[in-house]
Length: 112
Image: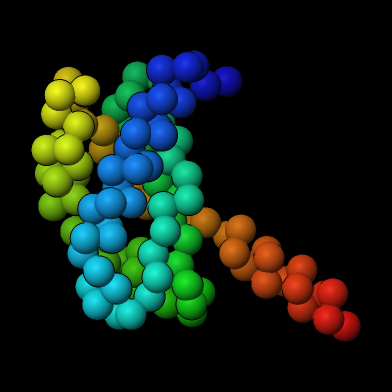
């Protein structure tokens, strides 16, 4: 179970990561729309798992690869954003969010 502090830090990281990715623009990700749908942080606030939603979903692997390749730069930018709030900037792990695929699957089933 997450503590209140974990939830607050995760929400702040989600907002800041989304803003950093928005600033990079769609061109940096091959024209895909990238959204940070959720962030979960470890109890010691050292690791943050960011769940990324990509539209169109066929570009998901390429976007996740680009994020993993630039994880150091993203963590540096995140550090500048949250420097006054956190002592240690958490390590970032990017994971795919499958909720968009689930919605598409349900829509397909409803159309049948």
